[in-house]
Length: 617
Image (cartoon, rainbow, N blue to C red; front, side, top):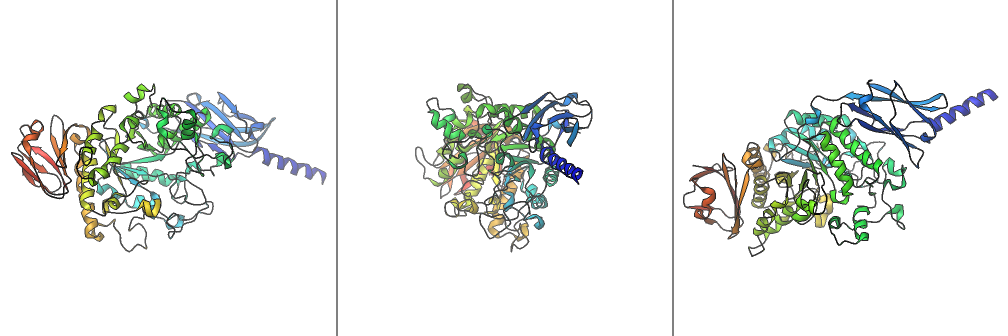
């Protein structure tokens, strides 16, 4: 009996001290440009044990931290000649736990994968609100919040399968890149559908599907010469993230004394990043303050954190065959650390595009975040970030179309935006948009006026940059952020659920108004696909007159004239004013209507209308 007691005690000790709970990344690839791999191994008091790798694999570095539940093991994958090796946890001579680590063979030409450019149109989807393709995953036993479509801020059941099922619709619309708001696990108690409080960076949220389904979506898009863009969050995680609940180091996140869980809210003034006169306390609260109570601020200055974020990003690119990143709240991060992050990714994938959410109000501030920026150089800083979001254009568009013309009002606000283009080192690599999942719906601002939508879509589709549209706007969807909050600008797409009375994915079931929006969008975006003059041509702007804005996109082969008339009445243009751009062109074809136009003397533009004219000699 005594002998049995000893055996049981040893068994208990082994289970307490030897269990490997997590290994991240769970696997990796041979043939990466950077062969160094840092493997996080997590388990109860795991650092109190010895580590040995099988098959002669050498440990280059092993890092123990203040929390004994973590080990960080570094290996050189170029020196590993086996497809699998074992991570052995040893106590003395006894092997008490093992993890088999796999080095997969990298896909051929992976480093040169295609990414989004100015040739593309990006379609932004909030997956929980788009389409429910698999009702069986709406709620999950291991995830706290359950599906309840009656709650505006609850989980509604949209998922990856719903997106896969509607790729014909997205492709037919003319979009070529699909940006999903975050789909990694967000296991917070409420308001988890938006996905920005992630609790596992290596796992797709079970209510959306699986890692395999995420990769399937990407591959299905690739088959159509389209691509998947991941919404990546480096600034904050969810407070229920397993790494946050058991911090490897105290400085893994930023904390403040006095607040619950170390919380202090950000002041959201990220202009302090480049303000040479900013106070240190303002800078600290902007960058280290939490985005919200459930979103601890991640410390990218910690080398272990930065390595974790870098490897996780590369893991998803390689695993899911991604076509780009959109990075949330970019200026809230430590800028020097993020410059290293962006460079590590683009060193591995030279063609890979990363667009940062640079929600600032001036071209000077926004342009400072783009790689090789002149304004960034003035601040002795290079972000290595290829692309930024043109929030200055977004911020001026609605007022430009709503205001009466004046010296600094009306369409001149658009001209003023474009007059700052010289600040950007890569002007064609700007994301241009008039709304997204955080803003008031355009069709709400303009009370479902299709003409206002057509003018806005014409603008972002024909100026420099990469157009981004938000799901549902192409059928006139509305949403009042001021009255209904975020949930109202993130309504369910009609037809995405079996119980929906109308299916707007099916053109034959669209209302007349929905058809007007949809058909215009479809015609314009599909025309844009083949237009190199729009993707990379030069621009000639003419200062708006009489509330009419005219600009030309041109190259050595062709020229396109764009006219936006924001008046409530028809306007007649004296074409002699534009002679330097019209040159020998005497006629043109309006893209949407197909109408042939004479360009010899005058041109009449209908009220509240836009013309896109392919010039002809």
